[in-house]
Each structure stands twice: as C-alpha cells, then as structure tokens.
Amino acid sequence: MNILISAAMYTGLNVYVFKSNFVDWNQHSISLINACSGVLGILFLSNHQLACHLLGYTIWDLSYRLWHYNKLIIMSSMFHHAVYGTTTYIAITSNKFLNLAPYIAIGELSTIFLDVRWMLQNLKAGEKTKEFILINKLFVTTFFITRVCLFSRCLVLIQRVTGVWTFAMYYCACSVISMYILNLYWFYIILKKIQKYMLLNNTIRRT
Image (cartoon, rainbow, N blue to C red):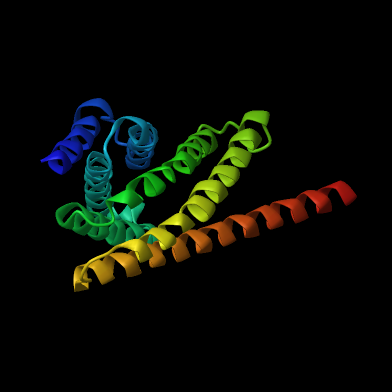
C-alpha cells in the first residue's frame, strides 16, 4: 500500500503541480523532490517505509521515462531503475536486505545537486558562475561519499544475511553488486569530464 501511495503522490505532482509541456523539467523537478524526501526519510521513516517510498518513485520515474521514451531514455538509468525496483520489491516482500535502505537512500543527496546543476544549465545561468561551480563541487563530493564510499557498506551487509538463501535473495545480492559497479562507472565518467574541463582551462590560459 505504501508503494502505491508513493507512486500516486508523484503522479499527482506531475499531473496537478508540474503541468508544463517541458517533459525534462517535470522529470528533474520531481526527481529533486524525491531526492530531498529520500534523504529526510532516513531520519523519520523505518527501513520498510523508506524502501516503499523510494520504490514508489522508481515506478513513477520508470513509467514516465518509458512514456516519453524519445526524450528521457538513458540506458544506464533505465537499467539502474529496473534493477533497483525489482530488488527493492523483493527486499520489501521478503523482509530481507531492508537494512540496505538508508545506504541507498543517502545516495539521493548527490541527486539533489545533480538536478540543481541541470536546472542551472538549462536556465542559461552560465557554467563559470560561482553558484554553478559550487554545485558541481558539491555533486562530485557527495557522489563520491554516498555512492562510492557509503554504498560499499551494502556489500558487507549482504554477506551477513542469515538463513536459507533463495534465488530471489541471490538476485538481490547480485543486483546490489551491479548497482555498485554502475556507481563506479558513473564516477569514472565524472572524473573524465573533470579531467577534460581542466585540460580545456589550461589550454585557454596558455593562449
């Protein structure tokens, strides 16, 4: 029930609050709301409630991306959502791996700065403004801390699950590992972009 309430809430936000025809703005605005609520949820929700809340958003976002596939389809994000959604559903229904929820939810902290960064870019705020540079630094820092360092704790926790391991449990464990690998891949892409930006700046200074 909590999953349906969460999914319905985000659908309502899309239909009644964010009514613009700018599909990408709608998606990033609701993503920002989910990221903020997910981080706050660590403090005020149980692991079960937190997992249900995040799964509700995942269902909405995956559906929204498929509905607007020509504008929002990013294969790495779709893979992440599909794996995360099925893993979270299994964790909720089996009551296993729910202790991973806070470590996954804290990763939404970096999403806050990612969405704000996207908004600044599309408002033509300028990539050399102090605000944009600050948001960039906060995004890279929080991504590394939450999705690379803290998320690695999940790899330890899945080894501590006791009882008879079913196929679903093995699926969850493999999914968590694959999500961590995807986080490492995304961080590699981030570092490559930083390197490219620094090389460009050095070239400009020399000319």
